[in-house]
Image (cartoon, rainbow, N blue to C red; front, side, top):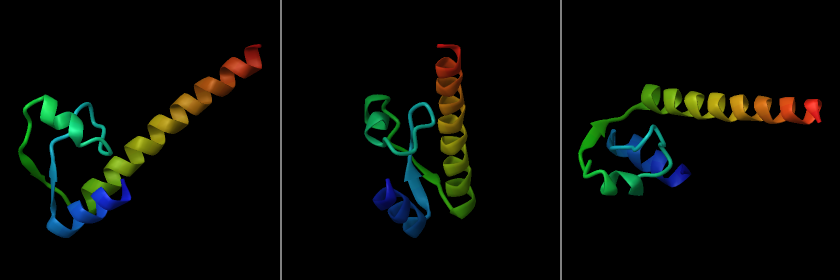
Length: 69
C-alpha cells in the first residue's frame, strides 16, 4: 500500500477502486474500470481516515462481542 500511495501522489493520479478499497487496485481490472482519477494529498488523507474509521468500527464490534461472552 505504501508503494502505491507514493506512486499515486507522485503522478497525481490513481486507478479506479472497487468498493472503496484503496489498497487493492487489481480489483478494478475485473470491473473494467481502467481509468485514472485525480489524486492528491487531500484524497489520500480521506482514504486513510476512511480505512482507519472502518478498522476502528470493527474493532469496537469485536470488543463488544468479548464483553458479552
